[in-house]
Every structure is written in structure tokens, then in C-alpha cells.
Image (cartoon, rainbow, N blue to C red; front, side, top):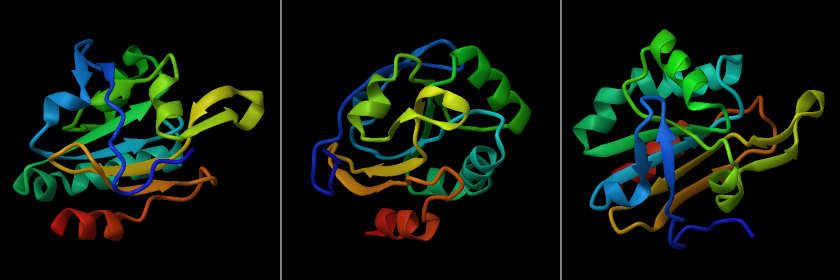
Length: 154
């Protein structure tokens, strides 16, 4: 069942590109923007995260935490973060549990690849509730960044 606005966001503990464990609950009291993306180093994924990178000062200015999550390894994500100069954590859902919990999961993706994160965006409020949820079926589509920002202003 898809997560809806008002649902409690599933907590998680994942390893970052810096090989440290990061949990959603560690950000309680802050708004958190979670971006799921299928694969590092691909065109639309890079565009999605670069949009967040290029607007990072806005999110920082409103005390909101940006997080990127994919099923890539922490090592791949580390190189992706380095190459693109992302200022926010990239987390590895290598075991695919968090993507599935958020309903952001392809059982089968392109080229017969199984178990890849769908492109999705969630805003979690200061109390850990879903304030915005968007899961895209088409991996070439981008999240609605305006709607995300409007949710953050509310």
C-alpha cells in the first residue's frame, strides 16, 4: 500500500556514501526531503539530485534536510557524490527494504534488472509524518519540485 500524506514515515537506518549509519529518526524536529532515485550516474537521476544541490542553500535556510536514496552500493554513491559535489547524504538501500517500505520500488526495471528504486520524493515533517508523497512510474519523469517547495513552506 502506498504511503499517504499524514502517514508515519517508516524509519530506517542505512549506510551513507561516507560509510556511516544514518537514520530518519536522527532528523526528528527537522523537515526531511527524501529523494529516491533508480541509479547513480544516469541522466535523469543526476538531474534530479543536481536540482536539489543547486537549491541546497534554500533547504538549509529553512532547516530542511535533503537525503538521496538508491539501491546502489555506498561506494558507488560516494563516487557519484564526489563527482557531482552533492552537499547532502546519499544512502545505500542495497538490501531494498526502505525503497519497498516507501512504495518506491520496481520489481523489474530496464534490461531485466530486478529490485531498483523508483524515482520518488517525500517530505517528512518535524514529527515524522508524511507531508508530501510522489512516486513516479516512469523513471524519465522528475518529481514536482514546486509542489515539494510549496509543502515545505506550509
